[in-house]
Image 1 (tube, rainbow, N blue to C red):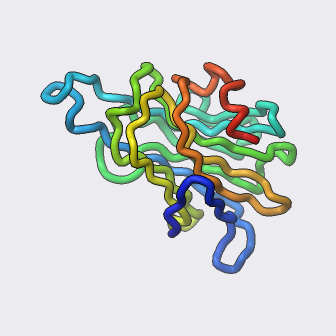
Image 2: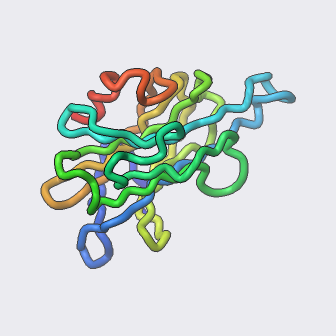
Amino acid sequence: MIELTEGQELSVTGEDGQSLAQVQMAVGWDHSPTAGFIGSGAAPIDLDASAIQFAGEQFFDLAFFNHLATRDGSVVHLGDNTTGKGEGDDEVITVDLGRVYPKVDTILFMVSSYQGHSLEFIRNAYCRLVDHDGTELARFTLTLGVRETGLVMAKLFRDGPVWKLRPIGAGIALKTPTDSIEALVPFVR
């Protein structure tokens, strides 16, 4: 497993150097203990994971809590966790890289608060890339609170015949990816 930082890239390949056919992007978070009834009074935050496909800078398709799979079935959201409670991954999105439509060259992964809460009361937020056997290939951990309602965590992108992962970790003022596809375009470049 590799702990990635902003600006690093990782080729999505197995130990043999061959491109992986399937991966999962898992996200997790914890609600800050200073929030809620006994703490600051902040309501529990329901984060939602999303995967947004682009062909160049053109929106192509997406998978999120309200639309669980892309039309081609290559990206599938496995279900909505509304609390972030419990150990391990809170939401998982599977990507069958071999089925991704050939024109799609970038898949952005983001988390956002559908209810419009700031993410500053979220702690231990991460996204991790896992292979089909459950082996963690890479992890990107967020270390600071985010005042916006959304966060672009990472992107998968084609680099010739190989897919690569690049962590982003940038706050964005979106409650769902469909609020403003245009706001996501700079992360595709």
